[in-house]
Image 1 (cartoon, one colour):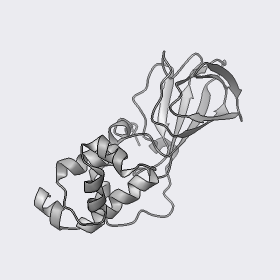
Image 2 (cartoon, rainbow, N blue to C red; image 1 turned 90 degrees about the vertical axis):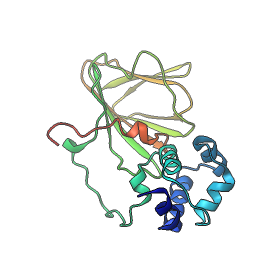
Image 3 (cartoon, rainbow, N blue to C red; image 1 turned 30 degrees about the vertical axis):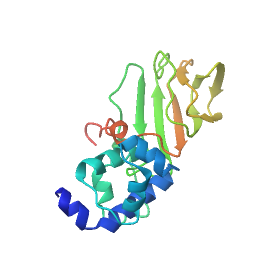
Length: 205
């Protein structure tokens, strides 16, 4: 598909999908414009089907929205119920003592959900990290972990949960003697396409 085709074919449908994904992420036109090197005015015209767009710009828009380029051209609606088997979970390349898998399906719209497994002593890394400015709910499925949240430290056991802004640096460590399993639920999503592309199908899935 070349730039001319994008500008003339399905122009209104592509613009409508950009708006759907943008509003689901509570992202303003100005914020998306800043992230993609465009303007709020241009994006407004694009969403209303009044302006064409080239592939390179669409790729930047898709990346900022955390979707793939094909998501903007998908014409069929996804099934109402999409089953993800445990062995099919896309996963990050395993780190020592720590495994993280993606549960929510692409294209991610209103929220994203991840599951993490920690061997005894395993952690999310040496330093706390932050991502975007969304709402995150952290839930311990099994085991005992310590969550560092800014200057606070919380020891959480199976069934415990905590909520916090994703902008606050956080870090998880398994302080127990068994494998710990945790769940992260984030709304609206903070991952972009490059982040999600790191989650790969596991061998044999």
